[in-house]
Image (tube, rainbow, N blue to C red; front, side):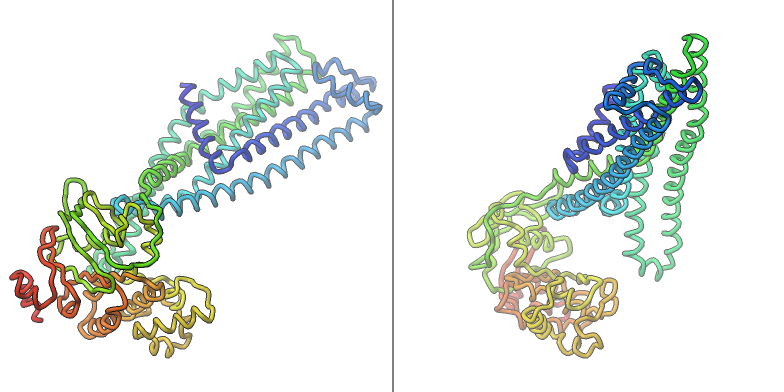
Length: 596
């Protein structure tokens, strides 16, 4: 049991050490200094009592092994008087105050460093995780861990190191007690063991409640995301209240867990003073009636004992506060391990632009036992426009995800200009890809920042911005706005029409100076007139970019260079529109049904 407890305690210490290094030991050293200075100051109460209650003389002998303090004062030529004792007490406690202040400031600095490094570590790890893992992940857990859980980890750090600091104080005071009276030190240990019997049971219950609270918080975050994402549907269908009831049940569970944690903390807080006074009373009675102790040593022992027990109970309360949020710490550690374990593999060869072609040879891909793509062979030539067509679920979007480097091929080979995707640096490659989806990505910021991705508003960037605005047929629209390019677009582009959102997306990709432009059913959610206008913008890009179009409306792909017909995860035909009409009865039927 002790071995498991030590392993758990020091595993957390090691985790904090990975972020803060040896700085955490400086905080422990300062705590020792605080305890020693406090002990020196308390020790001087005994000669003060001797002077006030006796004939004015002071002896070092009743102070036990701590008599060296008075001997040291005499050794430097300072006479032991009421004034000198009081001044030394002020000196020691003033130094203690400075040490406490320094420790507080240093602890805050360490907390800031810890949280900053955790946030940066999570962000960077999430950016590097492989897309296949991300697709299967719990979005609620990701959001909860990267937002709410980080704050609770900070609380865990505070409580953890406060408990360690208080443990150090207990050991320091016990050390002073040992110098005064060995028997007293033994009593401190016995008292600590007895009080810990109550605390250990509460610790276990608190940790269980904390784990339960973390799990419920993850579920709640996921439900909130769904509520916001599907708000329009829920309101339009009168289902908002029903879904809210679903959330309310989770909220009640969370509050019940919080209540349980609060009740356990209340028991510890309520029991602290009675237990403390009971143990102190027992120690005084034992020392006076069974050990024949005199008043002076008893009083100084009582001071140390009170300090030690105060630190002990503070340590126990801090440890319980740590256990209250330990579920969040465990979740954070597990989440970080998952992100690290599922880091995407990357090559080292940089991508400097498409020179000739992208090739797929015998490419296969699937999730678990479900095979989505089977033996795909495909050549995409530079500045060629190709369209991927097929029934829903045929694998069009999955194929695009492979070409974009989001998913790795399970079998076969993908290459760019003869360089395998496994050797290619994915980030340098993906920076040259433009990606426009059915639901345009619009950030809650200005038009300029949406298109330039927060580039500096330099003369060159402004020139490029207005250039892509013209290419995307947005220039006149933006100029007529009262704040022009500084106009805020609102949450998810609420101030724009569907066609304007798509044009913003197109402008952003063009601003990036891409080689490959992917349009994944980019016009399928638009009305016919808007679709035609967007199509005109796309037509103007032909020959300047490698266009890969996932199409639902076949009217948008009549003029592409090649159409790739995908059936049940296989490439069935590759041909221009008119030729494919002759080759494939299935494609011809699709065209007929859409009345093209």
